Length: 521
Image (cartoon, rainbow, N blue to C red; front, side):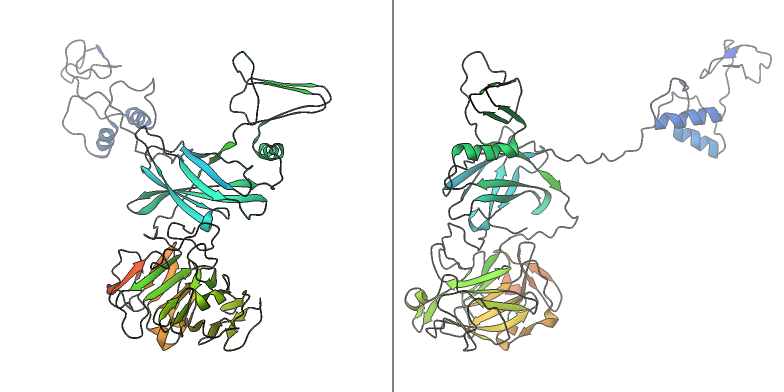
């Protein structure tokens, strides 16, 4: 509060309330520049909630700063003070507390088929309406499988059922690695992971032993009664119980159940696994068509060209006999006669698992694991004795009968090997055996003229890529890719997502090779 400041009435003694434009004698008051107290009060108001000591009528923060830094403008009527909005602060990222509810597992079915029911719970409503579920485990056929979570009209997620078999599996614990992907414009926008363990019991294990093992890892309440004592549990919600009564003991469980007799038995084995969201790099080069094995098909091969160029991206590649149902090998070989391919006859003299090609410290090596033998440049190396591959090496399967399958090492790459057939199947196929997620170095390639004309291919991010050595451009290979526009490709070629698209290969149990639906990490 201050006295009247009208210059035409210097002797006026009326008091003027803050913010008033006239005194009690109706004398107009001049507008003055805000004081330091007004500036500080306005500044504090922008930082926090309005204080009880703040002036009810004060200029805005921006106006106060302009007035303090420039000459006062013409007198104006002050307006009611409105605190400036605080600067926008990006909200902290809140991870989604999602989890998988897993049920339906029955460890009593040792050696039989199993079905897991997976329900997605707690996922944010802002994610994509369809999520990709990827599972990898030694229990799952072909090592991996992919499914989709689809949102229903009610807002929840449709459950997914995964089948596997423990037949011919050693008893013990097996990990199942889970990945859930949310896609945006074809790229992975969000990723959640978790890992859980499945118990494969002994074939002679009793039901009590199986459930005790399960409860020992999942229980949160355990009650024991020994030597004629009484164990009692009342109340509780969402408890996994392990109740044991020995030597004439009595175990009583009452989980807030209604009045009456309750039959206690082994409950359904079910549990929740928390999904942990993984941070993804800003620039994600996700492959549009992931695959571990594929084929380049030439519809009209010219002289010297193969009809199929088979692509494999495996740490260890197994060569073996061609089988339509449950083949044991990755590269399926059959005998070619002058009349064409013969999947019977001499092909039966190849082992289902004949030889392994893997990476070694010196480069790549081959190992004979067959019952019929193998000749390297005409010499049998011995069984289970790895031999380093050399450019131009002649690989003959088998050692007892010549001419069944004859291969030649036509290229030794930093990231793989190229094999050509030099028998009657030379026009039919050749093979790229590549290392997963390995970048090529064309300057270090060793290749014969037969392989030097082939395109430079490699495997990364779960799929196959083409490298243009002149420009350095990398192109992802997919069925929709126009191969005739890439260097090294002849006309009439297309990309197939299976290594043997001309045959219907059925893999039902434990095959090592992943099909087009099985993906790598």
